[in-house]
Image 1 (tube, helix red, strand yellow):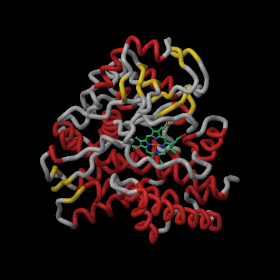
Image 2 (cartoon, rainbow, N blue to C red):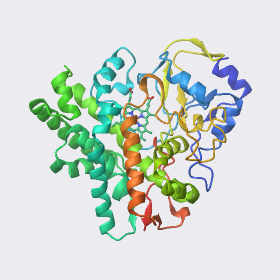
Image 3 (cartoon, rainbow, N blue to C red):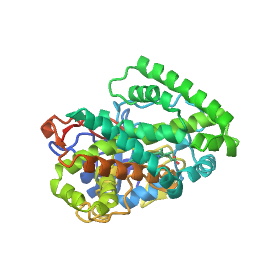
Length: 405
Ligand code: HEM
């Protein structure tokens, strides 16, 4: 069936963004309605294009694993018109491999992935613990209440990324300020431009230093061991920033909020810290913070899962919907840290599956456990109704999380 034939049966809907009132952790209800009609249904894009929405777990894996659905930027359309703080890809450097298909994409993955293996990431653990403890010391010294996003969830991934890239300690505060501006909801075009220029200058200087020193960090190794150009290295660095910061920040804050709102689960975790990895996995599934996309564009006409796909049709995979598919998980809308979940798609799937997933898992496990152990009586400092959420952003999360202890 083509989208227009499907459309005769089911009216193509716009991409839903409104979460159910009082349920900040559940995806918008129309995703489940769409999934009842089929794992892949027509989607009305702003401007009138009719493409596809994927809400089923198995279909999400199939689309993301099939390179006939291209990742190239040509023809991609945002499913939501007013989506917040998207960096324009126009004047960005080469090396942004997230927007590439094989064989170019495969080349970058091959050069980079050895820096993100379980073994490499495990070596970072002592430093991640040290940075976490230092942030918690500062937070504790204020006596509270604090906004957990500002005090902890934002700075931790920024520091870890700085470490990964070999950014000198002295430059980390400025780096953090630029990142803040780029990912803030209230950034004007002018501020965005200034911060991009500032960040670009910092990263170019960092790449030049890495070429000279060839240290043990990712940039040092890439300059020593590969023939990547400075422009490619800049593109790679920007991908790491875009992909790794907002996602981890929002998981840290929204995950903490979820645990605080599920006191029985939190008590289980506090009683048995060996549950921490299971808790991280369930939080990743249950929250699925990448809430718009991944997006793909059909590169040719072909039959797929009983549907006729036409070249140029845009496909939006909803990870939150796929991770609540009842065919994939028992009682999917229940948050249960003991469910032993493994096959979720919070990190995507296929050739573009998150390259930083081991690192993200480690940051989350160290982050949640250290925070909760440090503050045995951690609680919200405001009523839940006052916690604002990021509904119109690519990455879902809380706008702030005032806590006390
Ligand atoms: C909880 C935190 C994170 C989540 C939920 C997440 C999620 C995702 C998702 C869904 C994709 C797939 C995009 C697509 O298919 O088009 C992706 C790609 C990617 N992620 Fe993550 N990510 C997280 C943390 C990180 C971290 C910490 C890093 C590294 C520092 C990272 C690096 C990347 C890279 C490089 C890609 C692009 C891979 C490619 O195109 O081949 N991510 N991530």
